[in-house]
Image (tube, rainbow, N blue to C red; front, side, top):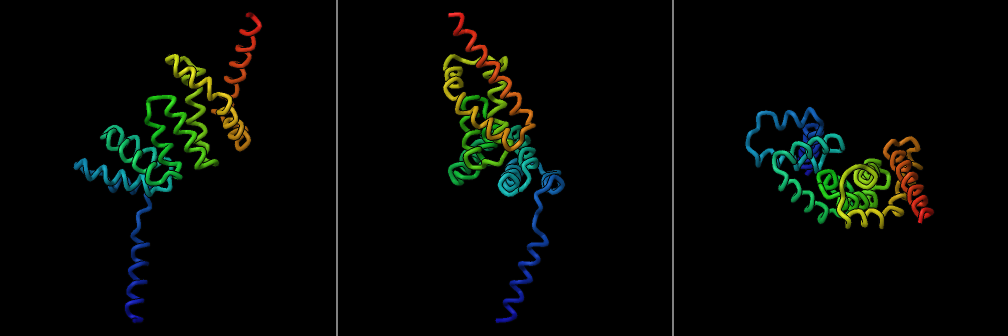
Length: 191
C-alpha cells in the first residue's frame, strides 16, 4: 500500500514538473511546424481554455480567427453555454463580433461576471466611442439601441473610472457623453 502511494505521489510530482505554462514561448513550441489544421485548432482550444494570460489568449484568438473563424465562434459559443459565469468567453466573442450592438451585449455579460476586468469595460466603451459617438455609419435601429442603453452604460463608465481614474477609454467615453448631452440640450432649446 505504501509503495502504491509513493508511486502515485511521484507521478503527480512528475506531472506538475512537466505541466505546460501556456506562455508565448510554449505556444510557439507547440505550434511551430504543425501543418494539420485540426491539430492546430486543438492546440488553440487548449490554450484559450487553460492559459492564465489574457494576452496569450488574445493572440491565440487572433491567429485562430484567421485560420477558421467558424470553429472559433462555435467553440466560444459552446463555452459561454457550458460556463455562463466565465467572463473570458463573452469578452473573446465580443472581440470578433462585427455587430456593435452584439458587442455591447457581450461586454455587459463579461462585466457582470468580472467586475474587475478593465478590458471588459473598455470593449463596451470603445464600441460606443467608435460607433455611436464616432464616424461609423449606423442603421436607425442601431442608433435607437445605443440611445436606449446609453444612460445605463454611462454608469458602467463611472464604475471603470472609480477603479481607474486615468483610464483613457473611460475618459474618452465620458468626454463624448458630456458633449453629446450638451448637444442634445442645445437642440431642445432651438425647438
